[in-house]
Length: 216
Image 1 (spheres, one colour):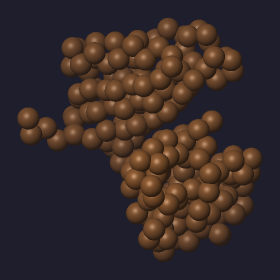
Image 2 (tube, rainbow, N blue to C red; image 1 turned 180 degrees about the vertical axis):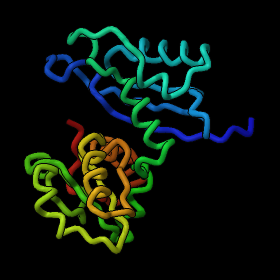
Image 3 (spheres, rainbow, N blue to C red; image 1 turned 120 degrees about the horizontal axis):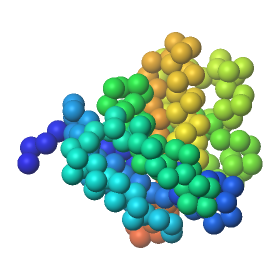
Image 4 (cartoon, rainbow, N blue to C red; image 1 turned 90 degrees about the vertical axis):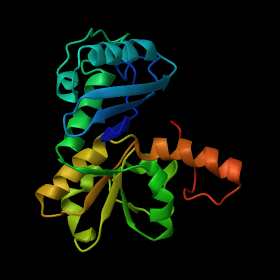
């Protein structure tokens, strides 16, 4: 149909994280450029993916945009959903991408970056790093980022990841505010990378780019 579009992928919790039955929900949102008009979505998870797709279907019928999506008021109760729902979060990320608040790179591009020895920054905490990490990544927890920025070069692209994308987004903004310009957020983070790499590593019998997969 010759439509110019972009997409975002996120992996938030399907309900408040403190709930014992909360699970990750893999969510993809597709939108038109430059209007931000919502085109479609995909959702995979153990929880209520159907209600998220119902929201997207309603927004498409109403010719809604990602700006409408991020401001939607939806049912909030900890056993069923968080104060900002999955679809709200997708709207926020999509809006930032559309308006070029930050740049992102997909996990499908990470293997080539690793093989080319790109500067990959892991901002997760120490215990998360110990549970698995990209083999040549630089580890600086987000809590230590401001006092350790001198360890991050300004003359090359920086690819930042956390577990699912939220903390790395905060790291991207912090670095941008301190004069870094060639910064990329790794969409879906280490968890998304682990899912993708594990499947392809096993089916293609190739060498892993992580020392250990972490799906937690």
